[in-house]
Image 1 (cartoon, one colour):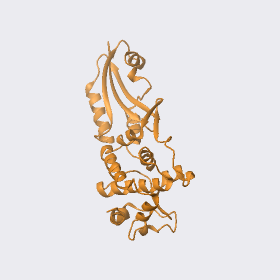
Image 2 (cartoon, one colour):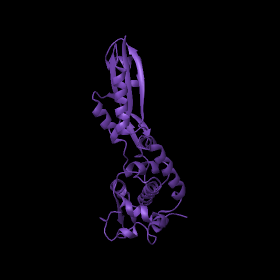
Image 3 (tube, rainbow, N blue to C red):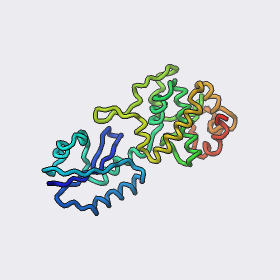
Image 4 (cartoon, helix red, strand yellow):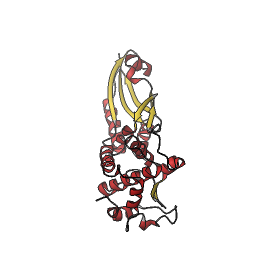
Length: 248
């Protein structure tokens, strides 16, 4: 019988589960252990991977699938560095990931969605001292704007947004965007922080959220007050002045 050891993960960037596949009659567990340590060292100890061991009559991946359909539609990655690179892509979020999650919980116009996404970012940054997502945030006329969210949803104007774009599709199945957030670095803490922010601000109208971000000495006011849509609201300004726009 052929032994198979599988390190299984998810790569949302390509919409696939991915696997490192080791096989043979005499597997080197030292090498597998070393590869696992390399994955955790680069991607973080909380990276979402699982390990599996099976035995089949052949060395082929198809023999693994014949044994257990759970491994169907998994992309086998032959190189450790390529596998790590795919996992790394999912360790960082973009603002659109947060916006999609918000839309699974709250009915929003584009304006309200922008403000809630920004407030999720600002709350997490001030609580944890690190970015929630990678986007730049700009001071527009009606308050902070998150780059990827603006590009995706600006066309909807004042209409409430549909929820049909709030899921990640993978292997022909629908995965909640919640799983995408949990797969990111410190994903559990991020999700808890986002939910806390939405509990705090989610029932407010878009106009109320605009008023909050326009408070005197808010990050928006220290970043050009919307006089130029190109003015970035930097993390250092949010850290210093977000307290002045928080709901008490």
